[in-house]
Each structure stands twice: as structure tokens, then as C-alpha cells.
Length: 257
Image 1: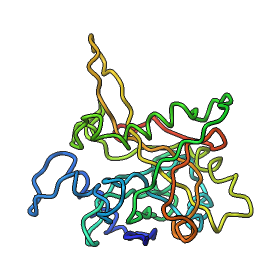
Image 2: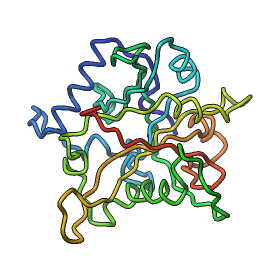
Image 3: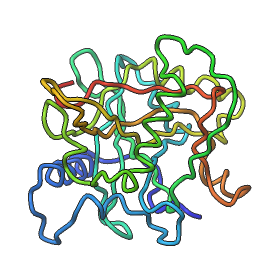
Image 4: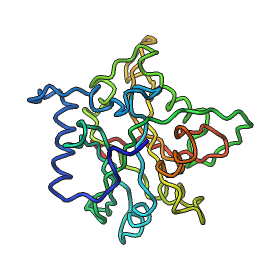
């Protein structure tokens, strides 16, 4: 396994180009090459057990630099279509913002592995989560919803990227979520990474009067192994659903936040 998008810093030009490409795609604007949402989420490794990408990651070298920027009050994640690569692909741009929503850090492009992760459920007691965390049961439900997207008859189309505010361009995380997620790395900082696991919220829209559900793409933040090192020891990397892990999710979509 090797990454087909390495984590890296982006220029202002590339940031604008990649995020604009996502905005055009999610708004249904026809592209000259007929690109679809299904194509940008397709696994690079066609032999992989899972057909769609299910996480991106930020190596801790960049995570530490991101969180060291002065004046940061929140972390913006913006969705992007990265091109040229082996194929146009979905990724996430991550950066800090101040109280006026001005960037306080560089733009960091999250890495994408060629092989999607396997979701592993570890059975065990589920303690009460602190208020700022998402409990295992809920985080696991959202992550598995994305994993079982096609099996559950949910189409990978613009509807799962459209909130009550319109087409989804990203999310705004509280700064503390990133700080607290990174903290348990301790002395293993060089061998771990912050993962944004793809998730799917199943909910009833405002004014719903029956059991018709809507779905919305989101991300769950968790500390995990650096994919390149992890896969050197294992056949595939895993998203571990365990009470021992700390999960962070945010419900502040962009727009409007």
C-alpha cells in the first residue's frame, strides 16, 4: 500500500483551485470531463475490499505546526478535489482561523491512502464520554453508515453533501477538539496521525412528518497510526471502533460557519 496523495502544504492558488473544483462538483455544475462524486471517492486500489475512500489523515508533523499557529480559535476543514493525481480525488484542506475567520496557519492538504481502511469493532465496556466527545456508539454508527453506504441503498450523490444550509463545503471544528485529539499521542507523535474518518449522519429534516430519513456527510476526528508505518506491519490499516479511543465530531457545517 502506498499513498496516492501525500499530506503537504498548499499554495493559495492550489487551495483555491482544489476547493473550487469541489464546489462546482457538489453544486452539480457539469465538468468538461464528466467527473462525478462517485469517481472522486473511488478507491485508487481497485482490488481493495472497500470500494470507496473512508478517511484522510494529517501527519503529526503538520498537525503540530497547525496547532502552533498564534491566534487560532477554530480549525477549518474545506473539501477539495485534488487534480492532477492518478485520478481526480477527494481530500480535505485543513487550516486555522482567528476570531475574524482569517487564516492563522498555512493550508495543509490531508493525505489519502490508495487502500481504504477496514472498520474493526472492538467489543468491550463503553464508558460515559466527556461532554466534548462523541460516544463510541454514535461515532461507530456514523462511520459504519458511510462504510455501508451502497449496501443500505444510499446513493453517493449531491444529496448526502447538502445540509439545510445548502451544498456542503466543509466544517468548522473547535480548536480544542484538535488539541485534545492529538494529546494522547505522547512519545509516539512520529508514528501517529490525526484521522478524519468519513461518516454519514442519518436524520429527519425540519418539518419531517414521517420516517423518511436524510443523510449528511461528516467527519469523525480520532488519533490513529500513521498509515505508511501501520501498513508496513499489517496487511491493511484499520479504523478501530473501541471504547479506548477518543472521537470528536462537529455539527457546524460550512456554510454558514
